[in-house]
Image (spheres, rainbow, N blue to C red):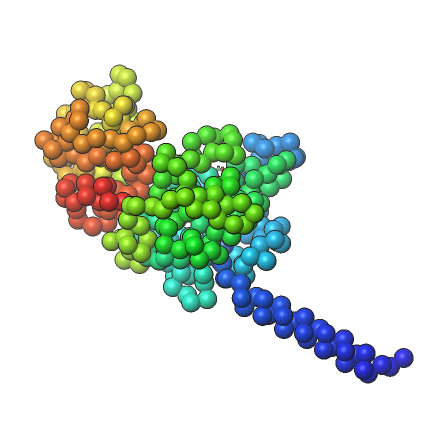
Length: 354
Ligand code: DAS
């Protein structure tokens, strides 16, 4: 039977639906998800495997398809930048990722960026982006402690939160952010403090806020320089200098410092207490400094900050203190800072400001 008026009505209805879908999409922010691997893309043999699984398996399009709720929050596009476990991240990975972020945030049709990442070095990548990407648009780094195949997997909500924050105007100008376990943390301050719980990421100065059911609740903002206010720019960086970390402990010898000092532009001393240097190591650090290697005192103690000229004569030895940065964060800042020819005094200013 042929009913032209019904067909016309159906066609008109379909056109109306299509038009409203387009109008709605035009109203939503545009968020790009750059996937690098990690547990958030991991898969285990069974739902009972929350710790035994393979990281970096699930492609970004599958992650997005598995989270239809985000289509109501933003127009989301995915790019698979890498598919690796983040303990294997290299300086080249950092450069490639940061340059892609920098290119995307320059686009007027991109409102925010999400980076999915393994949790092991997530804090390093988040801080690196915080230092070198010149933008006020939200950049949110996110991971998960359990693979998506596990009971009570945390990745889906972490990713949903990350897209919400990346799509939020009130997240602009706060530096690189990390959304894990309902919290919004600063990419500068946050570090992985527990290796087998979903509440793994903590900032010793506290979270910036929380996100609940897609709404951001802010309680503070960063005071250190970042992103648009940074003097560093990934578009002007082609390579990163070698900076290594030497861990200190009782009975320590200069062996590691001597070996690392052969190729490094800076050594991060993960000292005991307030970044203390064992008497057996002082002469080696003095020689490294004389040879042009920067010596930066951080601490193996997770909380507090290293004081300049307290138990160690930093002025006399021309050493730098890492302030409140843990050794792995201090390494990221030292690498970025030493892309420029800085004296120890200049470097110390950078550690106070960033
Ligand atoms: N191997 C860990 C990593 O890729 C898995 C994870 O926790 O994301 O960082």
